[in-house]
Length: 75
Image 1 (cartoon, one colour):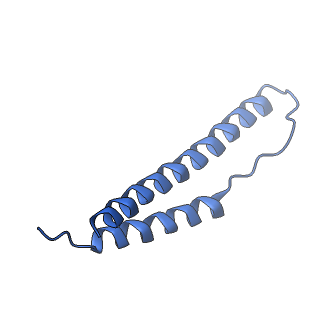
Image 2 (cartoon, helix red, strand yellow; image 1 turned 45 degrees about the vertical axis):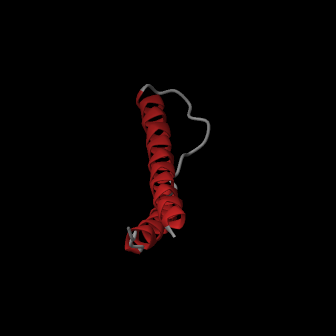
């Protein structure tokens, strides 16, 4: 059970890191696109943030973390 506890906790933190990476990547592309627009340069494609995917990753991460934290390690 202890291995499952740590596996769920590591999975939860990894999913949170993945969600943060997706969100920061999308925000970085939005920033680059807005600076292209301000400089009157043509922008190739409109960028839309993937908020739904980020939210789903966070929800899965929280479920995994709560499950991992609810397992009690016995001595």
